[in-house]
Image (cartoon, rainbow, N blue to C red; front, side, top):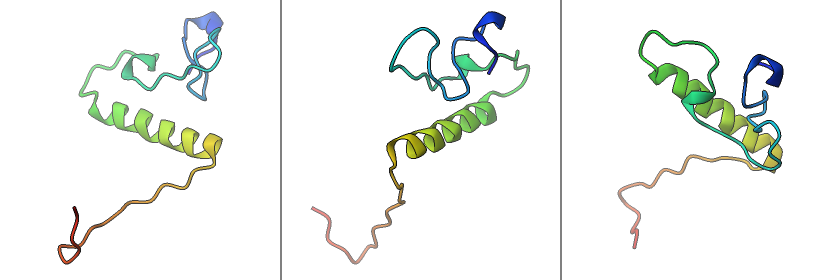
Length: 73
């Protein structure tokens, strides 16, 4: 991310400049002009956001697997 003076709207921690308590996780925060498929860029931004939220909130993320033997109601 670029500094505010160079036209960016978010800092490296996805905080919106000049707005307290707001984060943006969207492809529009990318300062470069993407000339190809944007899917991989969006995935990178999503993963960066997940890492930031995990660090800031002190949350441990787990993937849950439900086997076919368990009864889920």
